[in-house]
Image 1 (tube, one colour):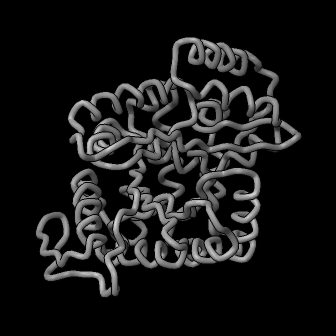
Image 2 (cartoon, rainbow, N blue to C red):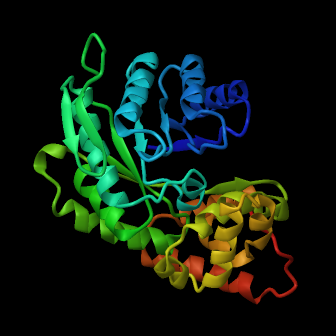
Length: 322
């Protein structure tokens, strides 16, 4: 699956136009990112569904904290109905720094996502559900004339436990990574999860959910990459930062800026090394080479390490982040 994520920081009409263009260009799926401070992703996805015929549509990714999991399942079911069966349920634990703005602690994220996925599947099958775990549901059901049926669930993941869980229980993983080193690491976690996957779960899709920025001018592309990289760096665990030899104190500073709503300060604090680690940014030729290197493997990782070394040694290069 080759998909595209659109951010509802833009008017929904514009997103619908971009979704239509994405389908015409051969994309298989269009996701809309889900953050409380942007436009509602399901409104945007409905507009996209109206302008397209075949492309899959779904949140990328919705979290079961700010929206009750049963309500979230109802919204995905509504999108599936409106799109003629094209919905994909992108589900994840959400961004810790932005959820804290709303008073959510994001407790037990692995259990919350897994329970939400299981309850959603039962609701899609037309069952009434009683559930007591990380959330409560009593005699909950979807008031649809017909059962929704099978909606693919893709789990947004970055850490080892969520990645393994997705491989065991979900239809796919949207792995938040742009670097061959990270994707090779994630591939190992997927293999571990697949070892415990029930036979009746069917095929599994391992998708790199990479942050990509393209411009004819390399500097402009890297500057444009700063916002998504800031959010990735803010939520990065220490092992991920260590894998790329990134300064944990700088990442923590970025997280503090994001949590306080000082977004420009967060973007300015992003370093060139963070852009290289957490995005694919540059000219069309550069991005094409980086995308080709996203396939996990020693050769790709070695090539990327060489490119990183070139950037790190270029002391005259200005700070360009995307």
